[in-house]
Image 1 (cartoon, rainbow, N blue to C red):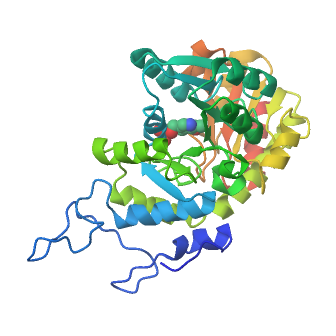
Image 2: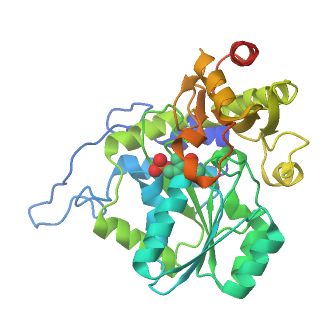
Length: 382
Ligand SMILES: *Cc1c(COP(=O)(O)O)cnc(C)c1O
């Protein structure tokens, strides 16, 4: 692999950071499936960095290199899911430690962290991090070992000031982790705004084709204790991604910059369309000038505001479910960031979290915008 670090994201992604198949001359990296590697007559490994597959895979390294370059990170580590990546960071918190977590984020994260902290005697505080005064005050009084924010957040689309959050956590002596899934590395690079570790569910926009489960952590602090622990834990405990998933990820990422751009364009247009629709009470999308986080998102993100948007249908749960039932182009399914548009009624999934019954979360794909608009139109006007 040549030095591709100075190229732009579109080039890095399209050429998989210069990865080719050296054996055949193929312009696509090969898919090595072996779980173990040969040693020579003197019992020395043919390649010192390839002894056993667990965390020694060339195709995983290729995927991690692409991710590092897109994220502006020194190092990235892939995991078999976004949750496995998140769990790997939280497992570095010592028993009796303190963690500060943004409230009303991806429900799977909140639930797992609550259970984990209870089991491990870790003190947990949850705070609305888009309210920076509240977040900074919590950092000062609580002094967290680790803080997690998610921006834009899922499904509320709240925007958190990453630099301000990093400053507040750092003055309390802690580390800041940012779940940047909804933005992808194309639209937002939290490490440049002071985050210590950035996390993505690569299952979503990074892979983008709804056919791979994966997670990633990236950092510039590669010699820090936390990163060393995360690496050792992945190697020893074995939360690794398989070669085929990594290969698919490399393939998916070739079009990531294109997809991020097109999905953001489509989402922006749908947000404006929905905002003007009489049956919609409110649209939550950071691209809208009326969104409370718009100015911050404009400063912190670039190239678009992402594929995720939520709207609240007038008339509550029954009205929202009626709209969902009439959609013909949008698939009714959870998840986000794929090329196909999805719609989800979050209250059906997490009725206990106070999510409004009329809230619909849309993951906007790359379909023709007129087809998407017409579909929403007919479902809302029916
Ligand atoms: C999906 C998601 C996760 C969890 O990722 P998995 O790959 O499903 O384990 C975490 N955070 C956010 C914001 C997500 O959307």
